[in-house]
Length: 414
Image 1 (cartoon, rainbow, N blue to C red):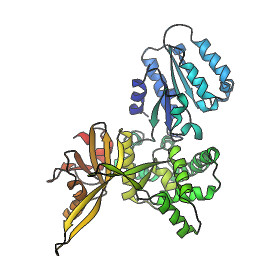
Image 2: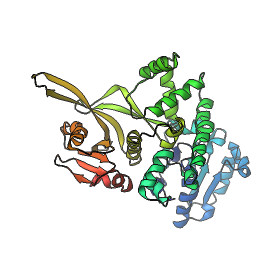
Image 3: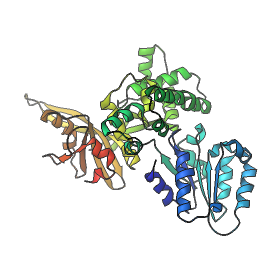
């Protein structure tokens, strides 16, 4: 499996004087990226193997290097000349006081350090602060649909079904049986992700935390906030949960990269709206297993996958809101809020994206593009549709086929 997007990010960061930290949800391929793909890239570039210090710290044979002083001494002793050395450490959180150890490597002028880690602390999105401003994060996502299709010899419709049902964790490519896939996802959610969160945080009511995750899974793409979620607990479960507790649980899920938060943005007012917001799952297979594959809602799953793809492509993604005014037959002025699924920013570049499973009629197309037509700027406006050809409609909006979008990394630039 080639993961060229992330390999290129590592390559661009070579020799930048910082600790390269590969983060990402558990089982998304961090070890493979660093110890296989990047390692072989260095060899192909002519780096001598004895100038690459590669240690898998979760391997029993390397247990002694989990001692911080032993590891420090080993790295220092291995540097025998003035040529560049590359230190690749997998599962570095298994080293006691690993922050100090990594910071010490910054004092060796010809050492370039790359690390991964996958416990709850290391997965925290603020891990870079542990390195006193000298860390450079490369965030790894599960397989995109394009990457997934590289590893599956099936047509794109079958691939889409598998991807939307079981997600993009790389291990799944080795499995053909659907029951095996479901059991794999069920086990890692319970024994890895949830366990990590509970171990890291003082969660007094783990049952409530899991029920919140289940609710988010059943309502992906829906606008919500901690108070609304707390009210749902009280109404549905008969359990009072304070909104502040809900907020903490949401933070725990985000810190472990299980979910991602999309803020609401007033396009015309050019400001963020505090609440409500949307939450999407980093991997749809993990979402589906939480609700026992009961709600295969292709419309919402497609929206989730488009959101993740936009993040992979380097966009900052918000949920847009546009005020729309019109007059009734009685000449009464009505104000309405229209939603733009995604407002995507990348430097000075901006695009607006709507997700629509299908637009079989002109009325449906008008409904989907109404919010986009009420944005008074010249940035590109796109509706991504599962079926039908890619084309520009009479309003100048790009109707982009879903597969064209997912399988062509330049699709947003056409």
